[in-house]
Amino acid sequence: MSRYAHSADRVFASGRGGWPITTAAWTGTGRPADGESRTESDVREAARITAGMLAEEAIPFLPAVTTGPGSEGVARAAALCTDLTVEATAAGWRLTRLPGRDARRAASRLGEDADAAAEVFAEYAGPVKISLPGPVSLAALLFEPRGESTLADPGARRDVMAGYAHGLSEHVTHLRRLMPGAEVIIQLDEPHAAAALSGQLATTAGRTRLPALPETEAATVWRDVREAIASAGGQMLAFLPGARPLTWYSHGQARSLTEVLTGAGISGIGINVDARTDARLFEQVFAWWDGHQAAGTGHAVPALTLGVGTASGTEIDITAWRRRLTSVAETLGLPDTALAELGILTGPPAPLTRSDAQAAVETDPGHPRTWLAAASQLAQECAALA
Image 1 (cartoon, rainbow, N blue to C red):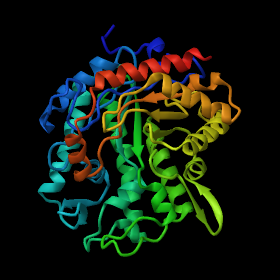
Image 2: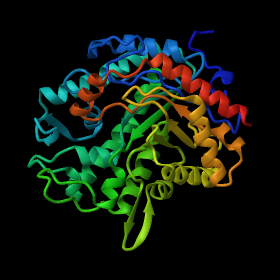
Image 3: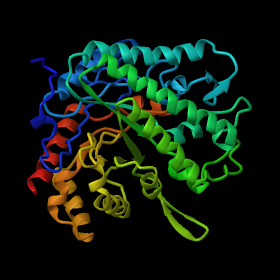
């Protein structure tokens, strides 16, 4: 059997409801497990390190090395958009009429990802996770030729989102050909979704705010993306920030991002949390989780995944984290046994923009092996509550 062969005992270590314990030991910023800096040419080595660390005990993932031009999450995602091309500017990535060097570089990064997948995971049997921007955050961060966010133009954002859904389907199909035994999980990071829906995103000039994205439109695009990924045989996980509110008021009514995602048929949600995360956010996502566990039965992704690693390298206090989780469960009237069904994910999501990538590299995150060990221990302690 291959060293990367899938082990049910390993992946479904929580033993409850078929949910895997999900851990990741590398930030995706060009800083792999040994702590040394790497360039975009080292993506194969980064993938080998990740697979070697995680294949025996958790779900490995395909690293997205973000240390070269065109390697930011937005650039990779834009390169997937069918019938669209982009170029890099000082402000970020924008749509353009003709493909140039920047667009070729972004496409090249996707090619390097695929080459790494073919080399490292060709014989792997089991789930493999790939992180990319979500469609709403992509539209928010991608600019029109005149310099404003494509989110401000209904026609432009529809083109971006539709092209992205089609491109994601083709990308998953391609990855599954390269990794025939793998279960492809696409983690779509949506740090700007709540702000887009609540009308809190600033314009490029910063003096006003962009109009709120209609909830029906957001739900439609998430449903289209989910169905596109599923049609290619992949799974989807929507990953949200834990440091920003996920609720807002519209026409005097409280609205929740988890409700909009549920309306789009999204059954796997991840929250990037740290020691500063407000207990109210925990309560919100736990309440969603409790009401929608049945919808995700048999899913390759946990109904709720908590990201407990941080870019600042904050160490994980296992006792404190278990106490926080059990306290929230008790507040909501959930039994401690419910915690056994959580997915535990370490490390922050991959940077979406050039400034995010630079900040992540300069932060000097804590040793990923420590993250992996701590997350595994936390997952084991939660499972022991069953």
